[in-house]
Amino acid sequence: MVSTGSTQSKVVVNTSSISELKSACDSGLKDFLKARGYEEMHTHTDVKLILGYIGVVFCAIDFAYSWKYPFSQTKWFSYISVAIYALTSVLALVYSYAVQRDTFFVGYNKAKGHVISAGSRTKTNEPTYRLTLTTRPIRGRQDPPVFYSKPLELKHPFTAWFYDDGEFASEKFSADVEAAVEALLAKKSE
Amino acid sequence: MELLSNAKKYGVRSLLLQGLTFLSVLTSAFMIWKGLSLFTNSESPVVVVLSGSMKPAYDRGDILFLHNGYSPIAVGEVVVYKINDKPIPIVHRVMKVHTENETGKQYLLTKGDNNNADDRGLYNPGQMWIQRDEIIGRVKGFVPYAGMGTIWMNDYPQLKMVLLGTLCVLSLFSND
Image (cartoon, rainbow over all chains, first blue to last red):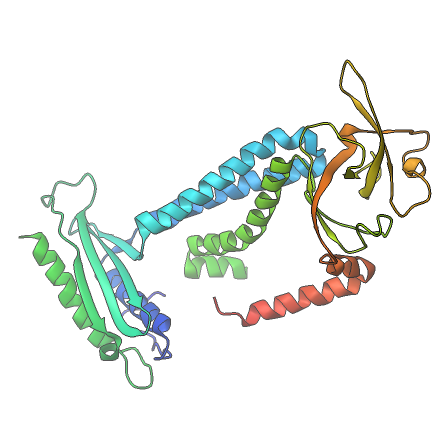
């Protein structure tokens, strides 16, 4: 979703679905950070895409090869392709659970020289948005000076950000998120 | 053109991700099958019995689990073999085995339990024996009649279309 200036399209969700509430907030935060000049970094997606398509390519070659030639002749290649497919699948899974976790946005701001990444979680039957914001300097940049900060955790009930009919109150959300981002960056400069 | 405009709207990555999600259904199934093939040394480790020639042991529609391995075949084992140039694999019992002393090469004669004659009529013209490398696997386990669906789909190709159509319609209504 790309926000076009101040005239954002109205977002309406089913307020009894926690996953809908969460994804509305996630994209709300994305829009907010993008509007603040944070360019999205796609490293997490790229890693998973590369791993995934390496597996697909080996699988396709194996399929074509064993379609054309008898089993005993193509076995040597199947050992390789099955091993590589298994390896890339496991790596993608490990990456997703151990590295990416709940991160849904990573963005850098060239002018300010830092990266913000945002992850969010919810718990079943608890309509609370749990946002984790972290920041780090852009790699290789020494100006402004290097800071790493502790992650900032924000726990907020969804009810504050949605009207009764399920419409997303983006101004209220943006105000709360802005405070959180400022707190995060203030922590940084301590 | 729609693809291009979508790529512009959502980004190439999200298209590639969607493609990957779809492809991984196919590739993971194929790779699991290949892995099983390598483990059992059998090009087709799971087969469906197509005829009643092994009655009463195995009936039409039974699913068989095969393991080929590399060891020699013994008399009395039920094997699945595929004659060169013939597309359909056959499940029959080994009646006679001749083994060459020096090379260990095996010559086998098979017969269906429910058939009156041995399989020489099924082999290629003039072929008296089948060889070890024509064996796809030995039967290690079976599930009675679990493969009936496959047989029906072979007998009535329209059924395949109906099933495919139903799956497509269902996938439209499922929310990821």
